[in-house]
Image 1 (spheres, rainbow, N blue to C red):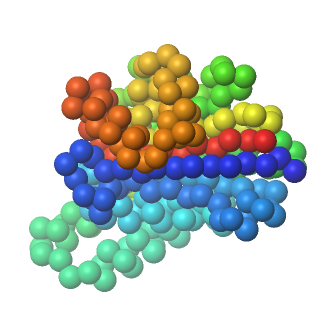
Image 2: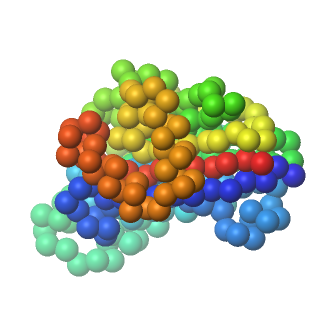
Length: 245
């Protein structure tokens, strides 16, 4: 069975606290890595302008662990997650202006990756501009769902907690699949960092080196230096690196 190791980091916008980070991620447990042939990873970026988007992105990645995200089942799955979000949001007493915002709901981008370690294959689904990058033999061989810097904009497709504002899943939920080989490396990144990876050729080599040899403080310092120089958008950042053996 194909073995894998993974490492992740998630950081808030420069100037924000950890609690204000609206990104979330899903990683397999130690027991799943040791024994399960199917392992799942996911990242989600909550939209800052919406209410309880941190909680919404957390519900989305958590659901990917045991709910169906294929094209046939995705609308039903999101509806069930929405009910959980609604119960949470309405249980909190809020001022009237905050209640109005809650009525509109929360929004988030999402990317999920399922790896079959017996068949050496993967399936992936994305709504919005979180991105996947697959590296083999020191070459970027696959990007999903974004393939160029021009694909990023200020209005990505979003999963909504309110059915009234829901995206068209038939049109905007993107699916793909592929094969995994020993020594492959896969990155999952939220939009700000994903845009930088596409903009700067081979920067993934630096990210891989930092993840392998440095601690989280080193990565945070590197990221904040780029933010201050306006070389990357000051946004919440999540990066998940998976190495296969």
